[in-house]
Image: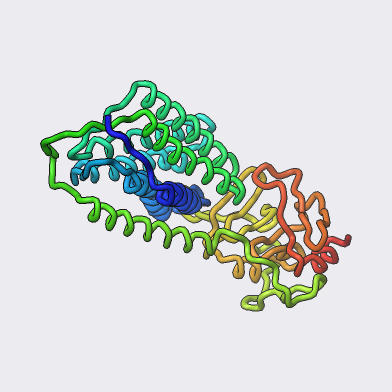
Length: 369
């Protein structure tokens, strides 16, 4: 067996790649289940490429840090197969949780699929090595598979139990640990022996060519990570307005009479309408909004500025740059230093909404507290 070591810098870099890919993929699907079918498919495809590409990139960043006493290369076809398998397996997992009723069993199934896909990608990628041959131990393969499945299930359960920011961050950590741990647990159970001939299934990729490909993949993942991160974190409350003042409501349209307002939403491929008074809260989701009514979370094509302009001013108020609330459904209010929280105890789809510092005073006056 050949002695080998790892470059510590590339080991750390591989973990960073796994975290960035996990965050990007899991963030891209936030709110995807409420999108129209075509947009949902696009979001799942983009997330699958991010997650699968991240699994593959993490593996080969770490493999570039593998230091053996002999030169070695990779078979191009096998390397491509390992990348496509990672994308395919994560795509299947995302299809499971974003198409159909999301249950705990489906979330666990998605975690199992990804948990199997990570070591499968690893061992297929390793089989493409030329001039040296990896030798695996049964214990190493078994440990990598079990730990991968357990950590992947945990990551999906945390991420999809509630699609909040903190859940996505914790799920990202679980995904990154799964990919990272599987690689190095599998490597701990792997030995290498020199191999004289080259018998690859396709052209050979030199380490420099592989490094170029991995660098491009990591660059794309990093770019997607930065673009996703820009819209992920809530923007801080503006320091300009005083705590008890807020910007005026938009005047783009005169609010309609309470009984006349019907709010559109998309469901089952067609546009339907809901009475404004049945809506407890509205949350901005990019250029669209989500409507919360009893146990329903509905996709609305209106941007939040249009919703604010069209809804009855005597009932709806902006509490945050991303939220409108209907005071008829608010069951409680709590002040937290310079911010606040509105509670909806009778709603199953939503339990609370944040109140920003700039809008706190206006909301308290609106609620009479």
